[in-house]
Amino acid sequence: MPTKRLSIALVAGLLTSSSIYAQDPCETALQSPDDVLELSPSSSVTASGTVPEWDSDILKIRAQRAGLLTLDVEGMEAEVSLQTAGNSGLQMVNSAPAEPGAAIHTPVVPSAVYCLRLAPSEGSGSLTVHLRMTDLCHLSPHADDHGDSFACATELASGASLPGALTPGDRDVFAFSLASGGSVDIQGSGGVTLSGKLFDAAGTLLAADDPGAGGFAISEALSAGRYFVRVEGPRNASGSYTISLEPAP
Image 1 (cartoon, rainbow, N blue to C red):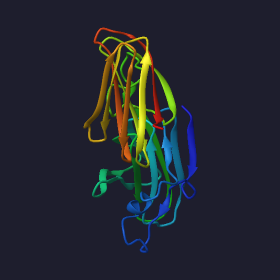
Image 2: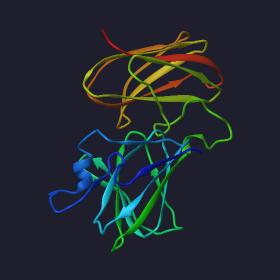
Image 3: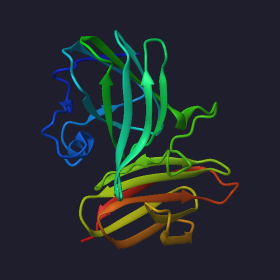
């Protein structure tokens, strides 16, 4: 498994807190979309450096898939907190003391940017932080090309199309995000009878199309936000298809 090594003084998204912050440094950092470290199940990240009596440092991270984030430290103990931006301000996802040999595990989702705050124990010394991701969407012994749930949805970019396949009882879920409002066309076609359903981030059904054989087409005016498309077929049917997302003319 490849490992990325980053200097803790230079790592993207790492900021040092001080008395100049009138608000939580995680709240300040999460207001910017820049300097986010992407984590994937295929690689781990190690950040290390010398700590000259600091208060706390932060690291912004985003998981590429729903999974389990594992964090452990070397060199010295530290208080660790993981926060994300909620509708009414910062939301605490996890907080725990970390010490060498005792890993911290936290479920994470790909739609959120997390602020990892590290507050080492008193004094100076060397601190190494290891971050690893376990993909919870592919633990089943039966491989699935696209997840069945919102948490395990496959990202679908605007202007892109993706292949998929349904097996008896299967359903595939895709996710996309809009930075600004606009109309979109979502189409599914292939060698299997398809139906498509469009949901918002709260799970509210916004539109559905079940035309029978030949696929589905959904055209909808949407505001900025995150959305999900669920593709289904008859319970005992199987076959391949293609789904596409295009801005409406």
